[in-house]
Image (cartoon, rainbow, N blue to C red; front, side):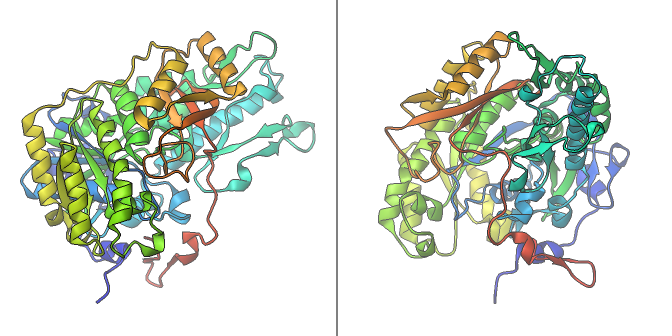
Length: 557
C-alpha cells in the first residue's frame, strides 16, 4: 500500500473550528477575525501581554536536495508536546508562492505533521503577501512619480536602490528597463525585481513590535540617494509614503492562527527567506505565543549558519526574546550527501559517506551552543536508514555532549515525536540556557561581518569587493554602522560556494555587495552569487498541479 501524499493526508483530515483551536490558548471568539471556518487573525493587543511561555528554536544542518524536514519536525514536536499535556504554541513562517510553484512545493510541514488548511496556507492564505506586495509597489510608484513630477528631492535615478517585487520565481525580472515610451510614461531607468520574501517590507512586518513601530520603520526605508558628492540618503518618509503604506498593512501585521493536523494551535505569520533575508516568523506572532502558551516552538530558515544566527542576532535582539533551548534537525540522508554520497544512492547503507558528513552536524551543534542555547539533536528518520547509520549519528551527538532523539513525526505525527519532546522538556528543566547575541552592534560593520564568518561559518577571513568596501564606508557615514548584520549567502554550504558541502576548512568568504535595510534595522552583506529573485527549474512543480472537478486541489505537495 503506497503512502498517501501530503495533500491526500490534509484533505482526509477533519478540521476543528478555529474558535475551538484558539480556545486552547485562552482566546475567545470575540478575539478572532475569521477568514472562513479554519483560519483567523488575532488582535495586536494579545501580542503586548506579558510573556509566560518558554521559547524553543528549531534549526538544522545545511539543507541538501535530500531534505532535512525542519518544518515537519517543528509541527510534529508541537503535536507531541500537546499530547504530553503541554499548552504549546507553534510559530512558523508563511510560504511564498514562488517556491510552491517552483521546485520546493508547499511549506506547511509534511506527512502526519503538517498545518491545516494546507491548500490555503500554501496559496493565498489571508492575503498578507499581497498586502506586502501592494505596500512595496506603492512606494515604488510614489518614487517614480516624484521623478516624473520634477524631482524636488534631487534623487539620482542611477542611485535608486528600491526595487519592485512579485511573489513568483521570475528570472526575467532580475534586471529590466522601465519608463520607455513618451514623456508622460515615466523616467527611463534601470529597474530590478525581488521576490516578496526578499522585500524589505516583509522583513519590517516580521520585525515590527507595534503599529507605531511599523510606521516608523516604513518611514526609515532608504530608496536611494541624491546626486552630487554628498549622496544624502532619501527615505520613504521624504516621499511621505509611510502612512499610506501602513494602511495597506493594517491587517497583514496581525498574526494568523491555524491548526496542526492533530488540531493544535499554530501561528503562521510573515515569510522572509533565510538565505537572503533574516528567515524568521514575526516577532508579534512569537510574542503572542509566549503570552498564551507554556512552550513556544518556532523555526528559522535553513541551517544554523543562516536562520539560527539571524534569529539570535537580529530577531531576538529586536524583540527582546530569550530562547531557552534549540532543536537541531539532521537526517542520515543529508549527512551522507554532505559526506559525498550520490543523491541516487542514498537508500543504500554508506557508513563511510556518513562518517565524512558528521563534521557538518558537529559544527552546527557548536553554532547553537555558542549563543548560550543548549541543544538537542533530532534525527529525522527515513525508512531507508539502517540501524548502524542511525547509531552512528546518535553516537556523534552524544560525543558532542548533547541530547539526541530519533524523530518519526512525518510517518507517525505527534506520537513519532514523543522521544524528542521528552528530551526537550528535560533540557528545559535543566535550565542551563544563558542566551546572548554573538556580537555587540556598536562594533564596526567589517568586524561584525568577520565575526559571523569566522565564528559561525568557520572561515579564515573575509574578502570585500571594491563596491562592498565603498558601501561600508558610506553606510557608516550615514549612521548605519551600529546595526546587526544580515548575511545573504547560499544555504547549501557553510561557505559562499554551494558545491562545498560537509565541513569545509581553509576558506574565505567573499562579500560582493553591502546595502542598507534601514527600515528593517540591519545592514545586508551579500556573499557569493546569491540572488534575490529565484528562477523556476526545468520542470516546475506548477506543471503537476490542477483543480479537480469538485474544486479540490491536485498535485500540491
